[in-house]
Image: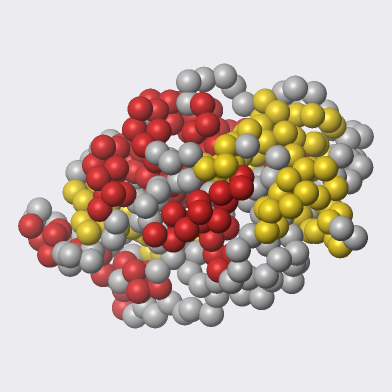
Length: 343
């Protein structure tokens, strides 16, 4: 059996579209027919070479999708054929079967435990979660990465109280999901910063109290206009090292906390004065919003469903798998908050 796939053959180059041969399933592996895949900033970083040397070339790519089970390998107990599933890079219950290798005209194509820029994919059992029926349609792909990372950064890592303030840097898929959770937890005010007017307009529709285009207005000036000197919490979802280096000054002394979600290019270094830590401020890291699919996905799905009318505006352009490079360009230009590939 073959599948069409987008293959990363060299960083800094376009993904190549071609058919690859699907290997026989090993123990703990599941063959999934992919219906929709999200396009994440992580994939953009991989393609553009911002994550450093890529030792796995050529390889498949993508880590956020929804689809249906076609076949199961030995010892798989959590799924049956025809189950609808969410595909995510975040581990859950089940066998950790590792990655796989496809064949491509005599060459080997590597793949991690989950890849999604293809029509069919071999996936490790513990990267799948059964999908419940709802009215979100293709936007349920957000459960694979954007929702657990963004919502989890607020709920699981920062753990704020109602009425506390927050700045969210970056109004892409992860940042907007963080915004949805901040609204759900009744945080106030919610400030969203970006350089895209399109994304900031969307943030307003999601309920941001204040939006700031930092290409036009200095953030601290915008805050002063609203009588704000500091905020209680901060989510950094841009990967821009200049933003990272500025966040501590925005946090309130004695308890202000920031979480770093965005991926800065490899080799860049944070430069923060230790005196900021002496003032009782903290910077936290996270791995997928510290989310656990079996614990959190039902909560995240409910919030997504509550915002379904606005969520659909995150991807107003339809992309086929053959248009994957165009979708990546839309990520670069910030013209689409979360591109979706329809298989």
